[in-house]
Image 1 (cartoon, rainbow, N blue to C red):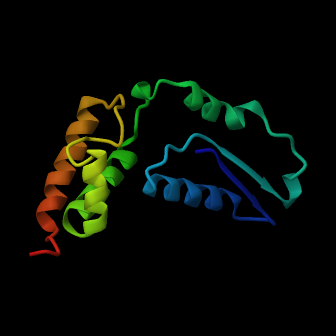
Image 2: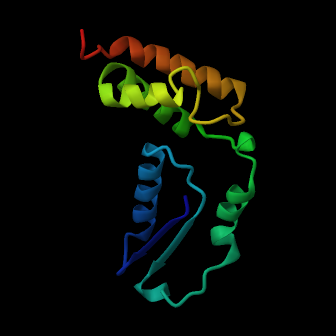
Image 3: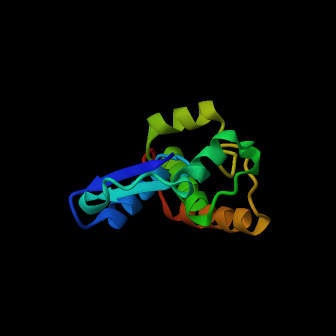
Length: 132
């Protein structure tokens, strides 16, 4: 997801960071940021601002390397689907995500994969199912 924002003055960096966090919560892959404030709105878009987005469009996503924040967010969403949100559970079952470490086959470092799995086991033990 290419994040684009414009502000009247200050807060551009915070706005783009908020959009990135929101994209992660949605399960999207953040792939660059373009931001302009009132003072820079005439500035041409530079290749470095969108090159990662283009790279991801053309990339075999099996090579994508999700970060720990993405993996932890995935595990939290998985626990919510399993224990709290019945409608989400059905969707996650249809997508076959409940037994996977991420939304799609990606290149996940073994240490990150193990850390995310341990986090899942810990948090899952703390969250009670709404059906109980």
